[in-house]
Length: 134
Ligand SMILES: [Zn+2]
Ligand SMILES: [Zn+2]
Image (cartoon, rainbow, N blue to C red; front, side):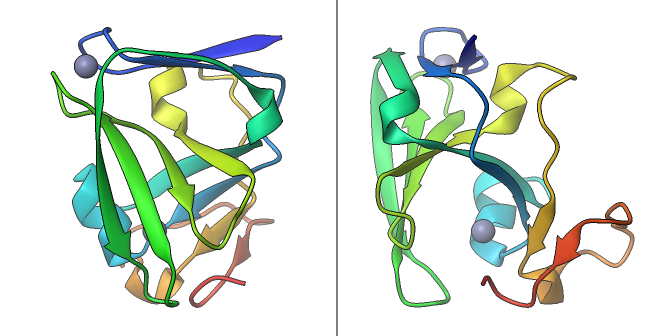
């Protein structure tokens, strides 16, 4: 099953095959400011599941709190962050779960950097919550 994630204006798309290896809700401050939301939901796939990318992107690299580099790629036209690479996850590509606009998309099971979680955010029972990231 192919899954296509698209930016808001529609010119940038990434196509992945199958289910993500894992999905995380990241509450780190870089994800908060990058998304403008209070956490980022990142769906991580193996790079071998990547089928196609179209559109024009810009990249932004930032150091992470655990000493790595996190690179986000965003649509040059509308600014939507569509996919990203974490230095701590070689061979994986993260895709912004919201860009699939699929309510049936697999749920996160882990929340990271919960020390920065907004007080009024409650993750479901059964999710693992980590200070920092494992
Ligand atoms: Zn766009
Ligand atoms: Zn984060």
